[in-house]
Length: 384
Image (tube, rainbow, N blue to C red; front, side, top):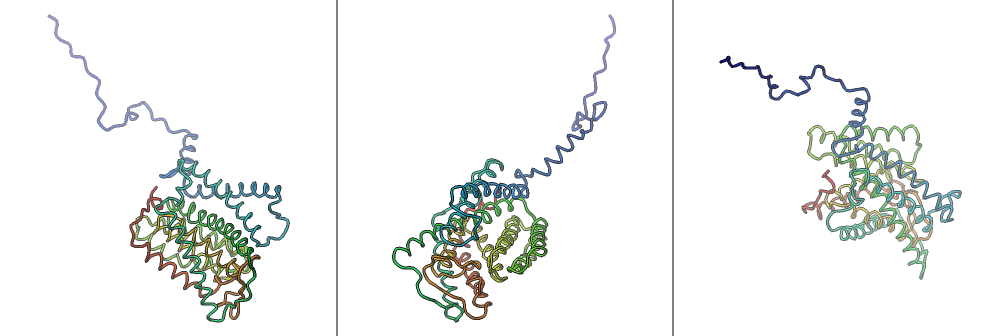
């Protein structure tokens, strides 16, 4: 009998070792693969397209669609860009309609690009949207009326004769209501909707500081007057609270970093209005922050949309005052500023008065008192 021969068996690879370690040589990624990997990291984050790129593409789309819509409106003789803009009800409506169509188009495209979201995902869902919108309408009118009342009581605003009568009151009231509803939708969905939602999911203190720093430097080198100090003031006001949130690594602090940015940028865009003073710009940015708080406590931007629309309607049409430095045609009552512009608001209108700060703080207090203790659904704001 022949002896049994035991053939040696191949050694099993050690557990946990990568199979690539047993290959004769490890193949390094090619230059193309490294570039693709770097681009993927640069453009894509944990929640899809990074927030900065999303915001940049959104504004590019907004400008492009706005240019196309404006060209069509000119061909249809609905607006005339060759003439100086006159804030009449029809001109305001068609200009804001262009902005609204641009916003809907840009936001809809971004909703498709960003993981196929719904357009309403940008802080337009949430509970009790219609009641919040109607509540915002009432509060906006009452807040502006309170400001006008205090200015009149102090002698800084005087009432003149009624400018409209009969059917004209309803005609111009409806036209201005439509125009300012578009204003509320455009500005609130842009800043408290898309930008607030997008930046919340992908911003930290340093990116917020860099964005605000660029905006302030732009104003420093390009703008003269028009209340640029109001932008600097809101930027400084939010600096230390946001820095503290960053140092403490507060969970979900991205919402407040985003609110700092969107509020500052909201003041920034108002520097282009004629007749603005620094208090009016600061007030616009500060009420922008209050609108951010409304999104936080109600879970939706609809309260802000209603409040914004009613505030502007009351200021421009009902009381006939200048709105962000722009006096309009076709208003119901007539009011004129008197005395020290610091108190009266001067050419800026009631929201350029120092007294507007008290009204804005009352708005903030009312929001926190009414909604702050309610456990509303905030998934649309903080979840991604």
